[in-house]
Image: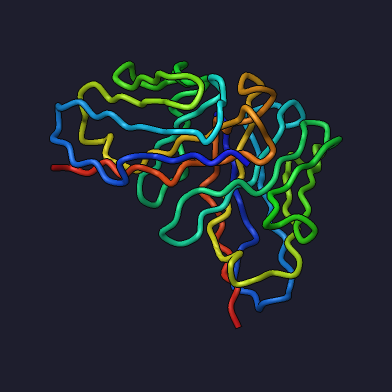
Length: 108
Length: 122
C-alpha cells in the first residue's frame, strides 16, 4: 500500500497571500495524483487530477505540480472561501486508493 | 446537474448489519464506476470500496474486506453498501462518489454526496 504524507498539518495564511501545500508518496505514483478540498460539514471537492489538471469549474488560482513522489498544490492568492482542509490521493497503484492525512489552511 | 444522495445510516450495535444507499441523478449512472469513502469523526478520508460501471468488479479496503459488500442497481440508479459484522471502528460519515474515467479508469471521485452517518455503539 502506498502511504501518502502531507505537510504541514496546518498552514496559517493571510487572505491574498500564496499557500503552498506538499504531498509525498512512499513510492512513485507517476502523475496519478488528485487533490481535494473539504470545508466543514461538506463533501470533498475534486480540485486537481493527474497532478496538474484542474477539474471542471476550479479557479485558475489553484495549481498542482510534481511527479514521482513529490507533489505541490499552490493557491496563488487565498480567498476567504478557500480556507479548508486539503487532501491528496494517489491512484497509480490501486486498490487501495490512499489519501494523505490532510493539510488545514487557516486564516492567519 | 449531478446529484448523489446517501441514506441508510444510523446507530447500530456492534456485530449487527446496515445497508447504505446512494441515489444518483443527472448523469448516466451505468457508465461510471462508483466509490464509497468514509471519514471517522474529526479524521481524514479513507477509501472503502469501488464497483465497476457494469458491476463486473468490486474491490475493497483491507479493513472492510469480507464484511462489506458494494453493489449497484442501474435500473434504479442506486449504489449500495451492505455492512455486516460492524465494529466500533466503522463509525464514520460514509460518502458515495462518482469515478470519472480520466483518473486511470476511475481512481478519483469528481462528485460526492453529502454523506450518511453510521455510528456503531452498544
